[in-house]
Length: 64
Image (cartoon, rainbow, N blue to C red):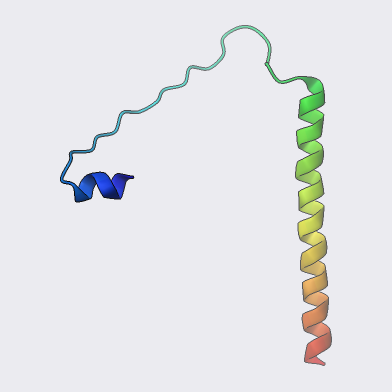
């Protein structure tokens, strides 16, 4: 989109988005949602490590 605007000779500007930190109140994310997200991150990390180990083992066995 930016490329097309510049290609037409239009001026492009940016304006920053400023987020204010929460001063009072609780998180809108439920505890169950936090646990589910943590589980997903750990599951994906485990899968990545397992695949890396398998790839490493196949390289070692093919080199022999």
